Length: 181
Image (spheres, rainbow, N blue to C red):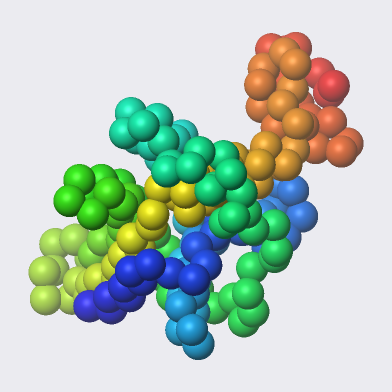
């Protein structure tokens, strides 16, 4: 099992590689020379950012409010090299009331490979589990959530009819009976 702990990281950001519509989403944590990148789904990041802001608002927000979060503002691209440690299957979020910090875990659960025979338990090889644990002060967590929301909204614009993503050439809209818009 690979466990990467950052308490707290110097940098914790969400970022992408690739053009809109073909982007790969990453979470990246850095402390000193240690750098860990994991890939995840856009929807996972959106839910994480929204829920993170909900938790911070419930707990009274970041100490110092927006000014404190601005100190952690980070618009720089992902650090290189971007080497995917694993693909995230589960994100968990928590609050430590003793320390007043946010806890984020990105996990890769054990899943059998697609070509494994489900009848033969001995033939199923499970990949090693992976965990990235990050502890963030509220101001850094708020800055992370804001960057993540901006990253997600910078993708393809939604179709005004169906809400699906619009490519530069349009798309086949199900609400328009398949006509291109």
